[in-house]
Image: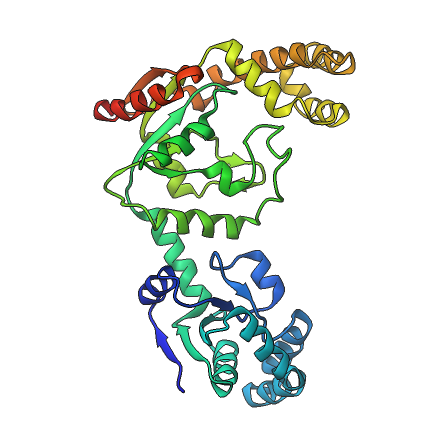
Length: 344
């Protein structure tokens, strides 16, 4: 049974059909830095073996490197087959390595010997990264969702998606809610490369000519940075701002962060103390020490509201509209937001 090598376009289309599991033949460190979303790691070489073979390749040439490779990984061939069978019990798989070279081809040969049908990516992961960059170069019909801290914009995005609107949740992809407190209760963030991969992958499921809702963000979301080409589109896109009353926003923040350990909240408050001003930060921390969470939230919201007013997040984009949003009748608020699209 032979493998076949396909272009990135055909590879992506086939993978999206969910017919075949996807295996990444690169080393664990390469995989952790960034991979095609949903791919399973099945490294042909571990990091140490890859380093050894790379050195031999440079010093002695390809043939010596190949021989050393088989010496190092040959005894593990049966383990690779067993693991591949666990990941792809139907014995149909897609495989890629860094450039579509020796690692993916050797893994494909091995799996074929075990009765697998294998599809290889021409140009490997490097080609996928070019595809990722191309996704950001497409002009998109963005609607930027703005609003003050505590408005519930991420939840609104999820409701818009449930109403069949196109949505990209950048904070969900980043595993971070954007503020100094945004990492609390979230999984560890991806490395930058994989963050970019995930956004591009989500964008590829959208129609670039149709409206696409995306939250108003600063350039950085925690440790991740929005790719420049996408950020420039966000900065200049049409914007819809939701107005949610202060009492509701206060209650939402209390519900979201009030259950975290006081010491953690104090530490995070200290992280923004310089920007808040020492007296305001001291007062906020004292509220936490006293167990007065509501007063702490009110203090923090005053700081974030002031920051919002003086930051790029509050600037008017090329077209703008506003919607008064009442969370007691959220369905009506979502309908109002969707209806506002005609003004943007």
